[in-house]
Length: 141
Image (cartoon, rainbow, N blue to C red; front, side, top):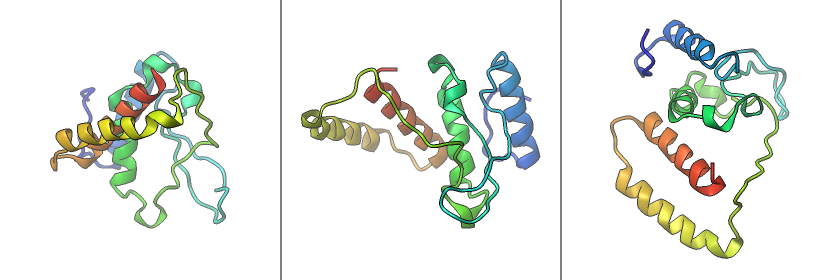
């Protein structure tokens, strides 16, 4: 199976791809699927651990990995349970946190970039690019 992600894959092909990427990450468990515990917000749900940022080095967070997460969520694998793909509470500590006075300018620049780069071809790929740009530009990664 190729390294490139194919949005037409069924669940079996997607899980096989995730396992291959995990093996390539030299034991980092970059894309290791695992069932998680109950939601903090109620109902007992099946979570799917796609990425665990705490187990990854910054250099391992690739656009392809983010694309896989967005494909999982936007592909409506569980359409009635949107937003339940989480591993743990998240706290982001940035090397280069922006100041409040810079937020309007940074948002204007970001929206200008997003509008110029948006395509209707693959919403999951665009979502991955947006996420990657926000993380890299906002946090200096």
